[in-house]
Amino acid sequence: MITFIVTVTAKTGHEPQVAEFYLSLGNALEAAPGFTGRKIYQAKSGTMLAAVRAGMTEEQRTKLDEAGHKDVGTRFVLAHTHEFYEELL
Image (cartoon, rainbow, N blue to C red; front, side, top):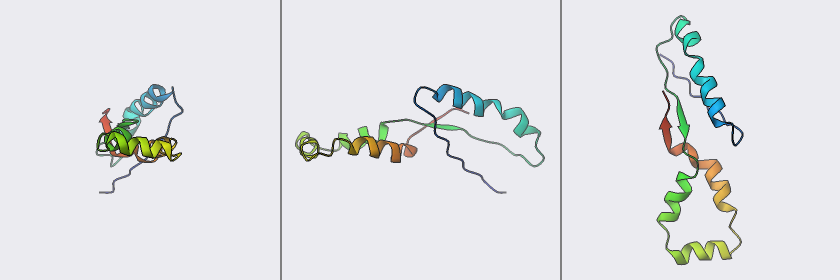
């Protein structure tokens, strides 16, 4: 058995349409010879940053922001949301 893992990104605001598209492929996939099953997960945006910030003191968060790293959270969220998922199928 071979497992394929595919990561797809969607433009903000279009997440439901992208999820529906991949959910709608079910019949075609099930008809493919050798297909055994699939799981679809959607990343929970912002949960990694929230988890990291929850482990920081207010002073640590303030120092990070004062040091000019306010955009670190944005980059961090985009790069690491893949660790928290919601199962769609």
